[in-house]
Length: 418
Image 1: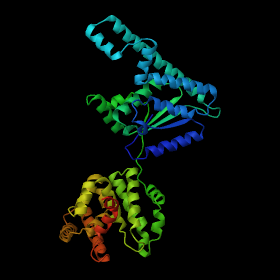
Image 2: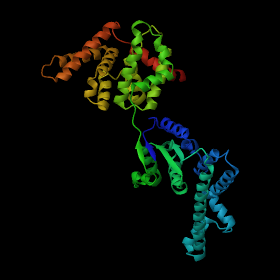
Image 3: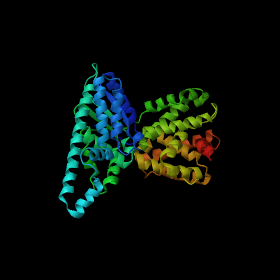
Image 4: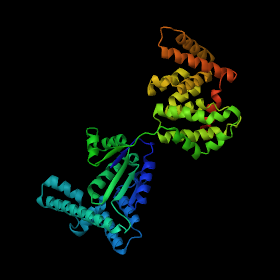
């Protein structure tokens, strides 16, 4: 079974929730972080060691079975199997040299010995599967039921060779009764790994179907509830509760703007978490009676997280509010940018533009649209509302919100590093 979703969208959290739910029903589970062991040459022993840990308190019979399984697994290893067969059945046969000799000389004896080697290897693989099936049965406790569920996580972050070999090992060695594998993957990334191993000529999507019987898409989550959960985790609810007078609405205004932007830009859960973590840094530098400009803060945090080039252009004064809105429009569409939150975002970016001449030119363009009877009614309304709110902001804050103050707070970590 595969749970498919891009990196940072909550697969690990979902898998661990599933594991907890199954274990509460007395179903045995193993969680395996493939990325944590991809330094090894062969994933087989890492997989077997996880089963061994599951049976550390098992009955003596189960432990004896487990010991035998580990011994066979050692033989099945890339180097171990050949070494063991040479020692026990084929004497001093050097596999590489014998292959070369068979090709160069066409000798029947060498070829026969190589076929013997393959036969012995097949017998060893069959024995491994038999012992594995027996171990799984022995490890089952009286209060447990169903299959052993093996969760494989972070597979798409592994070295391509390791990721593909892990899949091959699961397919050919662990395909026994009473074991179910749940692969937590970014399938598109795994397809890239497949192509890097087997070449671009391979149909990576079809190749991966060999390993997956059932496939589920993990839905993207874009909700205020998740953002509020992040506020609780980073203690921001307490910090915002200390805001004074009209600044008490900063939290709700930030959540609305950030939620809108997360949905418009398809922000992953991991990236949302990173944004809120950096907001915590900003809030540490913002006294309770100082303006935060939450809509502006949410916009800059999102741009900083997923469009570093545009953020650098904002930082250097090259990018205008129109550049930011054009970028959002390219992701969310024209209609989404007529939302009231989008109007607030555009107004804040316009009001905070440090280039006075550019602000004046933007105002003239909006006025031309708002006063053009031939223009689309939606465009006219949008332009008028942006003009009105931008005017309110520039009047409220004696000219404009200070963009550089927010940018400096957001980049504090990088400034400290340099």
